[in-house]
Length: 105
Image 1 (cartoon, rainbow, N blue to C red):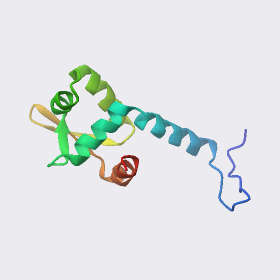
Image 2 (cartoon, rainbow, N blue to C red; image 1 turned 60 degrees about the vertical axis):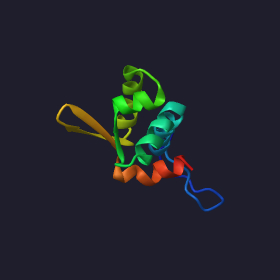
Image 3 (tube, rainbow, N blue to C red; image 1 turned 30 degrees about the horizontal axis):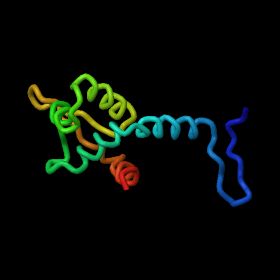
């Protein structure tokens, strides 16, 4: 199968395989209700950040469960993690903020 862009009758260029795989990975990352809630909580927090413990308390889930979901969001670039002493703070990556806001509309 070719990775060449294919021009459609609408004038748009069809996704090549690499772009389609990247988009599918992104959609899988946010196609989970818990992950969408995590993004919503972090984005809507007063400081624009939260810890796994805060997320677990808010969602009434165990920390390992929240950590699993956070790991996926961090690996796909939706969240970034910053260490401040013993606490790891999560915030929406500025480069993905617009996408996150679109997902949450």
